[in-house]
Image (cartoon, rainbow, N blue to C red; front, side, top):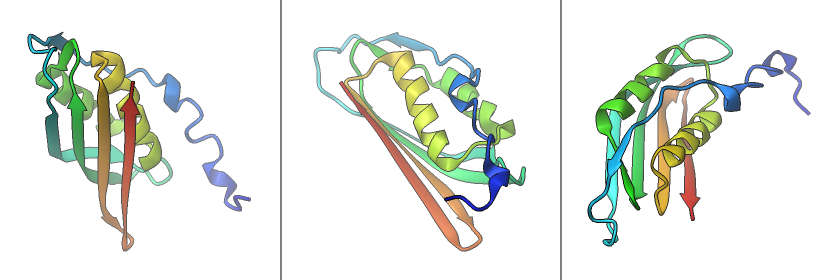
Length: 130
């Protein structure tokens, strides 16, 4: 049982949060089985309770099918979170949902490594497979 009720309701609408569209382009090698790896160490979001910034490195691996992620729109998508209060667990899962919706890969994995705060490092991985 959660003793601190101040967290109640903080993430009620996280699945309904309107995020920027992630563009994709046609993969001309959809017959090939290959992996694309993306990484950024410039990710920030906000702690939903304190409003303080959380800094993270985001790692993405995916096996494209018919579409590949367009990187400029994905960068703009990542920038959107700079003003969003979001729990780390929700962050990785929400990113995965949006990523999969944008390009429908054969599989994808997103790992968010949140910088140490208060002596604790949080790492959250979310994975999708057809």
